[in-house]
Length: 274
Image (cartoon, rainbow, N blue to C red):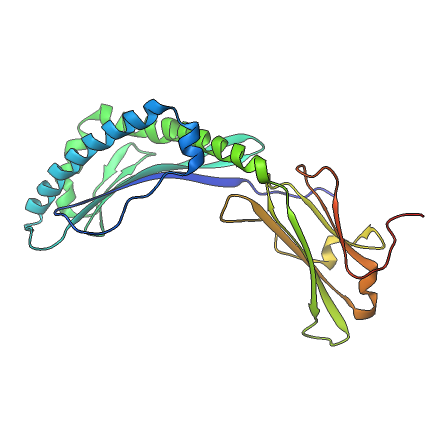
């Protein structure tokens, strides 16, 4: 049997927010430990310099937009910038899906980059001045397109690899076999097998009767789904007669396991000939 495993999609976005005045609100995020361990020291030094220059850029441009909108410092105003990329990964191959470079002011769309046509889109009249100015600098648009399609993708794949190295240390699945009364027939049980916490996503999970795998059309499957930590889970169920429970087991095979995990329902022993 050949099963189709859909490609993974990944994204990397940087989000900046600038306010027109100081507020006492939490908003500092710590970097994850594997990032701290993997990135070279000069990455953080260069990043600090880059963020300081962006901080000054935001201060200047918040003031420009406030004047353009006839706003003052009485109220709180915010300029936000989000840029990044999305990719698709399948069989070790990476495919660029799209890049995003967009600005918003006070929560409303202000300006966005059309990566395909290499131009800026201004959804509001107040952004037209900026659009014309930036579109007149062809090298700026070329750089933006190149960053989204190449440099951003390079960073994303690098971060993914760092994450995968961490996952490889604890990628074996936890396997759970449980049961519950059928909601449609009191004489039947629903047997469910759950494998979770595994990486990579390729896994073999079978519900078996007397060690023979049940055909997929008899099963209810969740499909392989991502967990919050980057690992995966898969759940399959079958409805059986209650008296037959001891004939069934759950069989899970994964590249991280030295041998398959077998979880039986009941005490029926059919795993060996002695």
